[in-house]
Image (cartoon, rainbow, N blue to C red; front, top):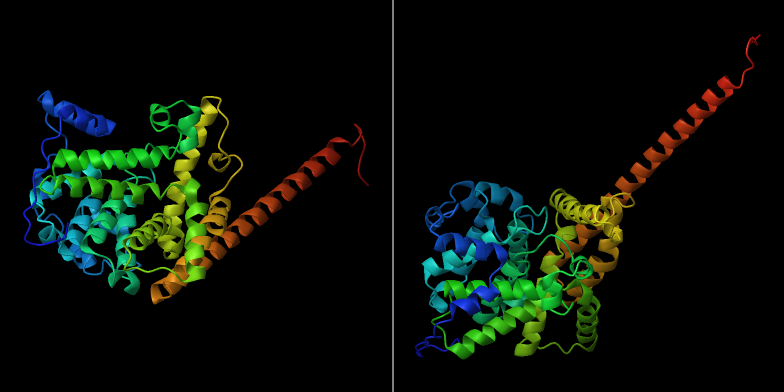
Length: 401
């Protein structure tokens, strides 16, 4: 696919019905409004201009900095962090020229991606996707990857990061299964969300015709590889990937000149990028933690309202942000990043592990202070209740000497 000289063949038209089957609900709604002649609420025109200036441009010059503040960048770009960041990375890697991408189609594709993330989600929204994309870029810049990844690997890595949670409903797979959601039935209760993210991304690729100039076989192969990357983010398969990664490192048999091994490392890199919030500086990490917990608790509230079994970590009555984060760091994040550090023992890895340790300690100290405060308050209530009880037990008419 990266050979020069061969002129790409047309992939041929995709039927409207086939495209519609792959569209997310929001995309279908937008297209339906357009067909009925109702103007879109967010026309593309203003996004086709260079709508980030000043501080936003200065931030992009340091896009490889692990301290990159995506919340600030999103504000500076008027809520268009995913579009502007991803376009910048495509351009800086020379992918637009290498793959002969139409810039208008690329912008349109990125806008559609951003629109299909649900802004009402506290966590799984376009800002999270932009943050994961920035983290993926940091990993792609690491020596072992920078020296071996092909232009196709880079393109797919960035695309997968940008679309990995596309059209996320703000609830998890078990919720979709126990509520008999149509997506659970469609994907047979297996990697339900990840399959939906992948198929939604493919739908937008085809609708935008971004890759339509490539030979059909190449385009279909890219769609499959994109799916393989997105499916790797299924947290229920975490131990499988972690065990395979650890086995490779123990045997020292990873060879990044091998396409299969490169793809596996891309999968691991995306998994790391997806759950790297605890490895960011405390100020950013804490904000992400609060947002994801808010989304968890919202799911728990829905479950309680409809008399469903409340998912343990979604129960605000029995959980706290601190406890959820300490558990997540201990059992999910730390094991993966320990192995990543073995694979890529660099300054970035040391920085991430340092933040992870400090953040975990920060949540523990906060939890301990909260528990101590709660304990003191309970003791004061018991003491006050005891005094009131003793006062009431004095016989009527008795006097203290």
